[in-house]
Length: 301
Image (cartoon, rainbow, N blue to C red; front, side, top):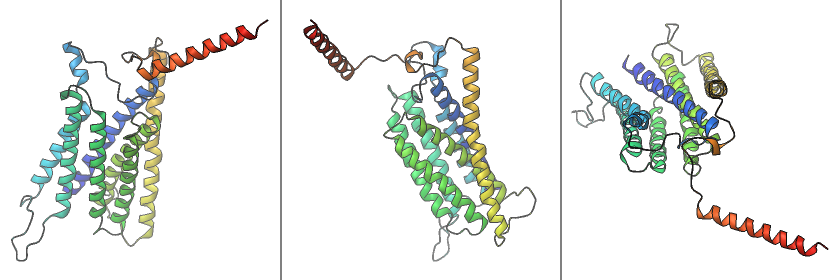
C-alpha cells in the first residue's frame, strides 16, 4: 500500500500541475503570443490583488512535497534508519531514502518558486528555471539507480519513465536560453502530463493491478502491453493541451469579443517602453527614408 501511494499521489500532483501549466500556456498563446512568464498583473498596493500574485504552484509543491515526506518517514515501522546495527553495517531502505530525497527536492523547488514570485522585490525567472533543471537532473540520477535492482515488467516501466524524465531535462535546459518559446512550453507541459499519468499507471501495474493478478516478468506479452499502455498515455496526454487550448480559444472568442487575437500589442498589463536598441533602429530607418526621399528628389526632372 505504501509503495502504491508513493507512485500514485506524486503522479496525481504532476498530472494536476501539468493541467495547470496547459491552462496557463493556452492563455498565453491566445492573449500574449506564447509569453508564459508575464501572465500576472503588475504589482500594486491594492489588497484585492495580493491573492492573484500568490504563487499557487509553489505552494502546491511545498504542501505536496511536505505531506509525502512525512508519509515516507511515518510509513516505516522502525523509522527511517540509515544504517543497520549489525557488523559490518549496511545501508537500510535504499528505495525509501530515494523517495524521501525526491519529495524533499519537490518541496525545495516550491520554496524557490514562492520566494521568487512573492518574496523577492523582482521575480527571477532564471533562478526558477535553473533550480528546476538542477532538480530534474538529480531526479534522473535517482531514477537510473532506482531501477538497478528491477527486472521484467518493473524494469520496463521504470525505463519508460526515465525516458520521459530525460526528455523533460532536455526541454528545461533549452528553456534556460529561450524561456518564452511557445514550442518548448508546450513540450514541457506535455512531458509533465506524461510523468504524472505514467507514475499513476505504474502504481497500478506494479502494486495494484486492475485484474487482481500480478503481472508476470517472464511473459513477453505483459512487457509488450506495458509499451502499448505507454503509447496510449502519449496519445491521451497530448490531447489534453489541445483540448484546453481549443476550449480557451472558443471561450475568449465567444465571451470576450473585445480581445482581438492580434499579438502582444493589444494584451492588457504588458506595455513596455522601447529600449535603446529599438530607438537606434528607428533612427536608422528614418535616415534611410530621408536618403531615399533626397535621391528621388534629385533624380526627378
